[in-house]
Amino acid sequence: MLQISILKEKKEEVLAALAKRNFTQAQELVEKALELDQKRREMQHTLDKLLAEANSKAKQIGILIKEGKYAEAEELKSQTAQLKQQEKSLQETLRFYETQQHEVLVRIPNIPHKSVKYGKSAEDNEIVYQAGEIPQLPANALPHWELIQKLGIIDFELGNKITGAGFPVYKGKGARLQRALINFFLDQALQAGYTEVQPPYVVNAASGFGTGQLPDKDGQMYFIERDELYLIPTAEVPVTNLYRDVILQEKDLPIKNVSYTPCFRREAGTWGAEVRGLNRLHQFDKVEIVQIVQPEKSYQALEEMVAYVKNLLVHLALPFRILRLCGGDMGFTSALTYDFEVYSAAQKKWLEVSSVSNFETFQANRLKLRYKDAQKKSILLHTLNGSALALPRTLAALLENNQDAEGHIHLPQVLWQYTGFEVI
RNA sequence: AGAGGAAUGGCAGAGUGGUCGAUUGCGUCGGUCUUGAAAACCGAAGACUGUAACAGGUCCGGGGGUUCGAAUCCCUCUUCCUCUACCA
Image (cartoon, rainbow, N blue to C red; front, side, top):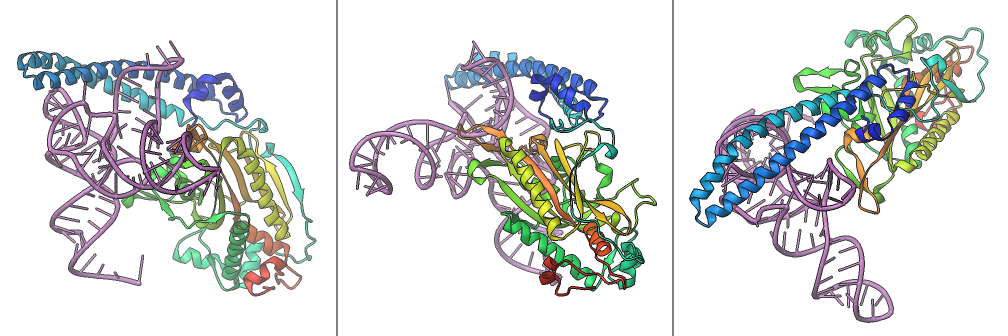
């Protein structure tokens, strides 16, 4: 959620930046928010004056009673009746404007960073980096969904039976490989100065709102009606919300957390023929890094996170590229996002395995996440996060790219100490 | 799940209807003293909102109510503690 003060101070700049998102309602919503803010403030002012009067009258009555001047006290009391009436109706009107304004504000997406280009869809994203060799596969190479079946390491049929589509079962070396990757990712993050966190896998609505999944992406999360809880779509939600309603000290910063969690996504409407095997699942594992930093340091932190993810992929010897998302493809809450894609050589496709974003104050404003600066002023912090990495697609690329003519998988050396085996 | 108790500023802990946004202690910050530190002494300091700056307004777990006036009384929800039951 944007701060109303930014809209007031830099309306034209905000509108120009929002245009890069191809967000057509920007003008209308911003105008509406400002108009409602004006009304809200007027109402607040009137109400405050009224309350001030009522407060001082009540105080006087107290004094009069103490002095034994009951008649005068009664006289004053009778005057307060209509004040109360007015207070009630002003209170209601004020609340009305507040909710209206809030409803408008939450519909305005974050302001794209200056480096973000205008674009309508994923096709307009810019490739800013590419590395790694695209492997020459044997002539009889198979896509991962056939490999896993042959090797018996991931079972979609079983998952189908016990749960449903998009919930595979990892077995034997498949399960061990996945666990090895998770441990590898966590160890790398620890070395890079991140603190590990194990959060709950279900969150309340306030948390969903704090990071921006609600109200925007309500239908994308699994919801447990009975307890009014949401299954997390990413560790970003519980981990960032650890710092909701928190005022940090400068010495606590930067916060660097890493968290491994399963992620649950309904993926309503995105299922199609294109999506096979591990490419898109309802439940998948992910290691996520989260940083909370001072505003002036957030883009430096973003670069650091990008460099960190890059390094993971280099270690895994996977060919990858980095995209800077265009305005139209960027998430609602993000100011700048880099996507990492690995090349999955048998299906000849680039698969997104990481998305690293700076949200600036967009989440912090909702979260009321601040720190005290040297002057003891409360300043909204910047939040960032990135996948490091999402497991299934990394797995898909590892399997496809490292297969030999006999259908065996030769794992990169960096994983051997974690898997306990080199070949599947 | 049942019975009882509790929720106050960074922490501890007073306050049971009227100048209480809140006594006090610890902790924190600044000063005096000291070569420096500790101790002692003096002083400062909640959050949000608002104003050009004052002023003003809101906040004692959340929400609602009684009253001219609520941290204090009533209702309700949540959380925590103790005992009982259950359980990994």
